[in-house]
Length: 253
Length: 282
Image (spheres, chains in turn orange, cyan):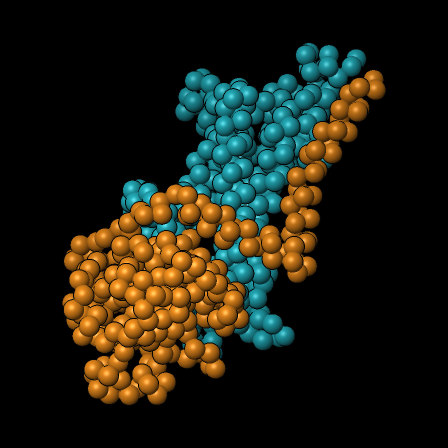
């Protein structure tokens, strides 16, 4: 008679252990540290998976007839910072893209100089973190080409994009790792749907990083900086929304 | 009589071993995971409470389902719109209680979402962390249940059970809450087999796979997967419909547990031991 009772107790214990563990985890989430670890685990696992699977996989490219009739502009649609306003006044003839940080030869590119580099055109789907999608055609210079021109220092790990638009008191910025930076579909786009990039979509030049969600696609890019760590920028989380609202830095999922 | 003998020669009113340890562990773990996934999923939906068919879709495109708030004849109202049909849902959907006695324009109300306050970033962290648990758990439980015979012995219906007459009879029985008694209650009936197999073998995998197609990285790695669901926005719609079906399943499941005898049913899913119900007098 003793044996089944023991086993029953064991099974009861095990049966209760799993939900208890999960509920315990949820309880811990209320506490800082443990909760951050639990809620950060998904992003960490996804990033680990991306390092191993499909590093070079290409995003789907669509046909011209798939292009959305209306492409919803999102975030800033009209920067007000003096330099950008001045550049816009000249039709972006005075605009310059500064490329520096952990690079071998820092330099600036004018829009004409970017246009003179070999271009890539791609029709891709833009997925916003909120859930909507639009399809557009983008033409620009692969970021890999620009980075190849300046050369990265050996300790460069991230590429940071400083933008001309401000949200409240904060300048928009974003960052990506070198896997995405050197991906062939990662381009600095200066044309959309066959015309100059409209202001509401980030004129004169925006980032397209096709295997991540919309907020990573920095608009109104003014400066590109190679860096060994993200801690020196903003609050150190690697981007405007990451700092402000704790959005995931890796937005491939 | 010892329990071992009872399980060999079961009689009404005696205890029989009904659920395997793996079934019980995954039942409770997945129950907790699904609650987290549903509530955080509703918060994510709140960020753009419109659903579309096809590859792309945004605010200017027609939505087949929409939850929102608008100005009605008597002030602001919350609405739920399905195709051309609109229901006023003020207080629950579209417009509901916000923090500190305020009224918030939000698709699903505070009590239904995780976290309660409007926080897409945190909801995504909950959803995309627990998604790993749901996906690995479903995969391991699936493989284990095929290997240990749970699927073949307990879940796959026998040919004779699939006759339309038999299924109709079972539906009538369930609808009148006449559940199997005595020895018959020891194994799943045909409806249970079909529903459990459908939920764990089709619905949950469809939720996981359609969820994966929300990821631009996964889209690049396995481009055909999003095509299976008819494009990214269709996949998002299917993900929502599948989640809705899970809610329906949970409601029916809980009602049946109560009807069948909650103490006995819940004990059997914790300890594995199930007391065969007495045969009802005719």
